[in-house]
Length: 120
Image (cartoon, rainbow, N blue to C red; front, top):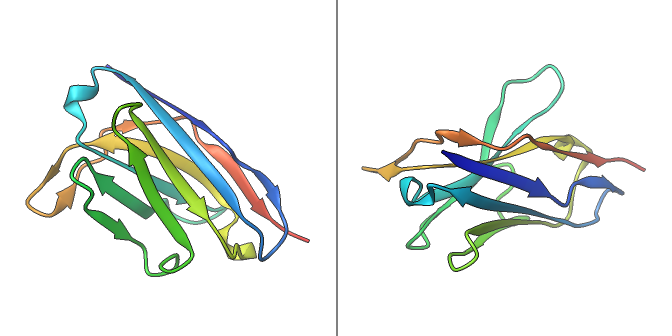
């Protein structure tokens, strides 16, 4: 079993920044990739970004240049630095983890989610 615990969400004004963190525990050998999805009200859950143990990253087009994903393998923690936030970034952000194979990420484990609200 893998447990993922997110932190760092909140309310921020447009143009502001937030950093999300997610710590993994348990049978973490089963996850070589960690990432973030988000779900806005009335919309489907969508990939935001992921990062492999080796540092391969992938971003949604909507966040490229504004968000940066990173990880501390020693701490089994992944971070999402979000800059230049927009109201359309408002969503519940879910940390996830799983294997990465042949160019595809399989997020098998999920955190509880943390709310990010961008509003003036």
